[in-house]
Amino acid sequence: MAMHLQRRELLKATTSSPFTRDFRHLLKFPRYWLTRQSFREPIIKSVRPKDRIKYWNIVPGDKIADLRDPTKKLYEVLSINKLSNKVFLKGTSRMVPGGKMRQSKSIHYSRCQLYLGTENFNTGDGRVLSKNVFALRLGTNNKRYDSYHRRYVWDRTVKAVWPKLPKKSPLMEMLSKIPWPRPTRQSPTKPHPKYDTPKDVVAERTYWPPAFPTRVSASIPEPASENAYINYLFNPTPKPFDQSKPMEVHLYKELANPHSRAKKQARWQHFQASRDADREAMIEEELSDLKGRNTREATAEAMYKWRQALVDNEKASRKARWMTKERVAKIERSRKSKAKKTRRQGERLEDLVLAVAPNQVIPKVKGSNSVKSSSLST
Image 1 (cartoon, one colour):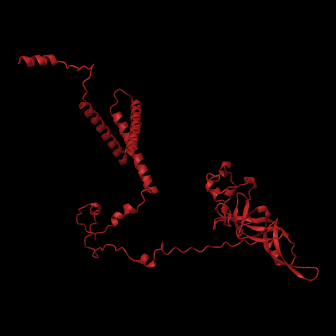
Image 2 (spheres, one colour; image 1 turned 30 degrees about the horizontal axis):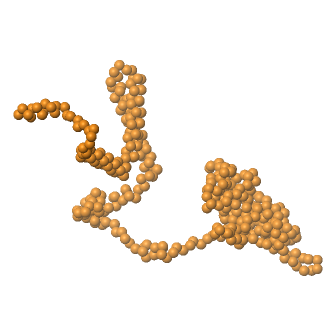
Image 3 (cartoon, helix red, strand yellow; image 1 turned 135 degrees about the vertical axis):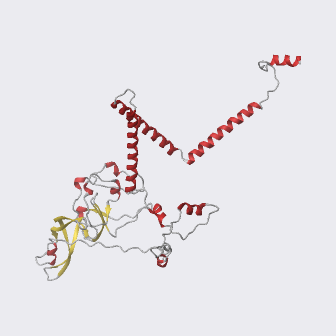
């Protein structure tokens, strides 16, 4: 388990689950994570790790009252934020200007008074008055880890209550162990009829396996050729292909995961074995002909050649990966364009004709006089 919080945990710190599966909300994180990277991200608020509450006795589903509210109006807990010690109340969402998401009213954990029930109190004039009973201070007891449900559980107890209960009140039994709220299970949403496959279409049979001979003495049918099947699909003039032959033998190449752990391990082991074989072959080749060297020097030279071969192979493989089909085509187009440009420049120089003007001298070619005299003599 990482000893620090991750940023995605900060963005999802508000939860509607009443269960505590770990205590990662007590870990530290860099303070600059509180700065929003974009306006779409929610505003993250957090208190110091030493001020965070470890065992939450107020969870979603409880009914509470605000300590500062003189009317003691009851609210249901919608969600909690264990990083900021905030409790969000259900049914208190308000509109936010700017078209943003609705925000529910939140109060601090210390202002929450847990609702225990209703008790009838006798007044002095013989009347009965019903009042809501709240827990002013809560405690924890019998802390343990439930390995079956994979969560931490404990019993929450009442340390102080308001108003004071009579000794024979039925709520006195709750003071030692307050029941937890039952989470409501959301019913699965039905898919849209346009996006849901009908049951008869799912149950329709679309595959029939090939018929094999029932006799033991009969010969096993020869499986179809994969290359013939591919040529049948992509060749403009396909050859006749028997589609009744079993093709299941070729499905493992399509259905098997090439990136599975076992296959990656097998490829890695094959790669290491080939490297070791090349090293042993080079050492054996150098030791077969020492050329005045001792065994240690020959082995060191073989190891140097082996390492240099590894570097060269890595460069060659990197170049092969770099020379993709698109890149090779681009290089070929560039080469043809440069050759065409050079050819056109040469043609323009050959066809160049200078106009007659003063101060121009036609260069003479060597041997032109001898050629002229010989032509005159003839």
